[in-house]
Structures are given as structure tokens and as C-alpha cells.
Image (cartoon, rainbow, N blue to C red; front, top):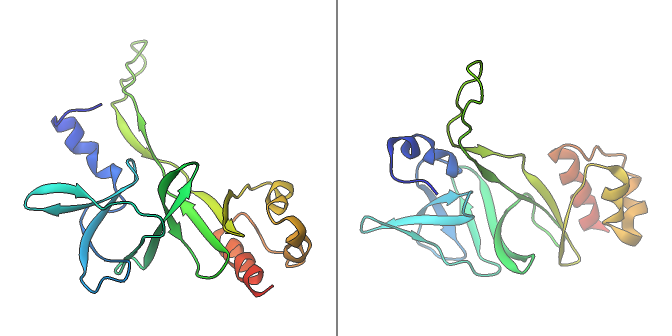
Length: 179
């Protein structure tokens, strides 16, 4: 895709959640590991003997970045393992996927335009609900949103919470966990 050129060096940090390796706890290991989340590849990287390696994805693996106060967990989704950011604990969980897309270089078509170099662009996070052990995407349309809950939709609707922000979604999931 891209080589080790100066241009790639300029945009490479955009692949990651943070530019540096951060202290993280993996599962129930006592030892702290320094990891960096490569959002573009959906991989947790670590460096060993000057070589970049990837943490093995296992269903249910939990990673907690201590300084960021963020938790990630590996779930099977669409027939592959993927990292999800976990926003709450409990039977039902609010999850999100962070996405980075590669944008190809665009050459100017006229002299009035300028060339746009290749770049990695962070996309809007996609939210999911882990409900009855099934992961479903959360839509911003109220009708599609409440359809996810099936027979518990009526109980969730009575809260009158805003579904377009993370605080409202977290409150809905907390309420759902008490039912």
C-alpha cells in the first residue's frame, strides 16, 4: 500500500489510537505490557527485541489501558475476531468500534485545484449493543434503535433518554441491566 517513505512516516501515527506504547493489562496477567492499538489493522502491537509483534486475538481477551481508562475486548463479530471498546460492565454492554480508513492520493484535475496526498482518516465510531450475547449495531433512528431490544423495547422507551450521545446510551444499558 505505502512504503517507508517520508510521506508514510508523516501519516503513520494516524493508524493508531495513541502515538506511543502505553501500559496495559491483558486478561488477568499480573505483568504490565506496553501496547499500541493499530486501529487501521484492528491489532494490538507490542515491541520485542526491536521487532513489532501483534498480540494474539482470542475471543474474550480483555485489554485495559491504565492511563486512558479504556477497556477493549475481543468478540467474534461477522465471523471474525475484532476489538471493541467496552463502555460498561454487565450482562448487556455498550460497545464501539474505532475506524480508520485509507484515503488514496487525489491528483488535481485542473490548475485551480491542489493535489491531496494519501492519508489515514479517523471515521466516526460505530456503536454496538451486546444484548442477549448477540452484538447488534446501534442506529441513530429511534425506530431501528428500539427494534434491537425486541420485547424489552417498551421498558427502554419509557426512560426518554437521548440515543444520539454516549451518556444516553450508557444510561439505557444500565437500565437494561437492572431489568
